[in-house]
Image (cartoon, one colour):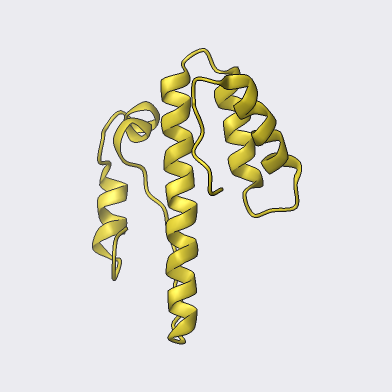
Length: 108
């Protein structure tokens, strides 16, 4: 995904998302999210969800590549924060997420 998209051009974005979703790439789930963005009436929230997913995927991919180069192994656990946490549990930084962070060696 080396090109920037005009996120107001929903038809063009849908075509590219179909390629991602149905192609044999590691970005199939991102393609699915983009399709949901195109269908969602609240496009700003949908775009935010897409960007967060993409950043998470690319960050963990890069971290894993670096770890592999230096013979390290990483594991990931995910916690809720921000708007997603508010929507799901009513708090921006739930106690469960805090506990997860406190027992971790590092937090991304």
